[in-house]
Length: 356
Image 1 (tube, helix red, strand yellow):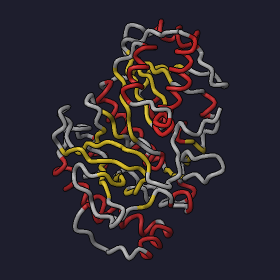
Image 2: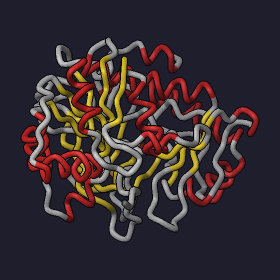
Image 3: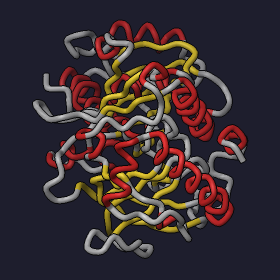
Image 4: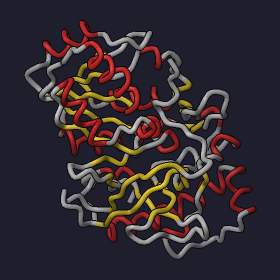
């Protein structure tokens, strides 16, 4: 099965056992491909003494996410690079650079569209972007924020930015947009901390309320700062509903190193691996795979990473696998929660990088 064939499968309709059969063969071939086409990756595998053959998905070698900051990891010729995605990072720190050819970039978009169909159906709807258009100034070198905006824009029919270049809320522009599309669903997209500070915060301070009862909010990243302010997921959802009447609020987990391959929250508050991705939770003492209910470090797997060796990444995030194929929402596959960052890991997030 090729990746295009996998995309024809339902986003959350394939059981874990079925998925792993296909993933094992595909990831084995993909690892060999990257080893042949990316010298830095081959050198790393050699240094780690990774075996040529694997007996299970858990043996597929992991690339530490920090490697994308320290090495140029590319499995295509330089002239075939279509765009470069840069991860977010704190000021003065190195950022990851993710090299995409046209095929990989297209697969990222198609994957995101398929996953989003679970929320909005097979249609494009108007989108309110909780960000400023300034973030898209460089069309060749995209930040994680810019990549997120462009990615989600694929599922929109029209869009309106919520903030001006100074990150002030454009209330008049928003209200005109909402009035025009008030009779149908509206997607509201943004990064968690920015929504809380510049959307919710501005409306709360001005005692202004918006009416978006048909709104569907998708947000991700930036929980570290909210947790530092003692803002829980429940507080976030309650606050958003208070200032905008949006009842459908869904978090997602994702990263620049695997753009498009998001892990979407269900109505029960669980993050789900789709048909097009998978996770493992690792014990960092011996790198063994953690059992359900045991906290460890998250490893993410994505079969669409072909232009760069990002198909198996060990993140700096901590999480707990909650179950497999048995979530009350009836989505198949693994579901989990993110519990925080590894100790001493650099604190970063798509929305954390905006500093006023």
